[in-house]
Length: 195
Image (tube, rainbow, N blue to C red; front, side, top):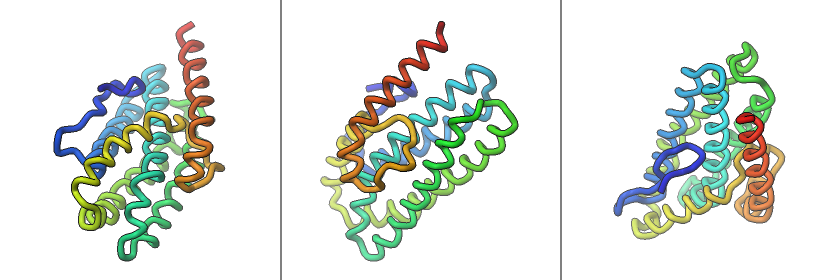
């Protein structure tokens, strides 16, 4: 299956699990940061929109499925709290960045700050969170959760909402309503830009 927002494959192999799904997303996010950096004009703007959508759906899915797995592990609670604080800060910065025009000096400066923070956050997840999940969570359960992770991304909001609840229950309650509004906004922007 291909993600219509990014044009990338969202399916995994038979040995896929939730950790592998998250790491694939991290690679896609790094690629999108590179596309924004290298782009100009409409290409830069389009790549940035794809990046924003990918970051928003990815973080929502992590908050709903990945972080709760770690909370139960030894020292997991403190690691998750640190990751959630980073994600909250990134949502705020990304929401602010969305208000600036790609290609402007203000955008470029803020973009590099967001890029650095997001990539550092992804590295921390891969080093601190993922090994613990692989040790603490049964392989069959991790494989089953990969499909749920993709399903959560499919219904998640496509823009950062820094004032939304930082919990899985908050995402489950508000997420579908916000996601519909975000997807309508995305469609309107796409139609506007083509006319």
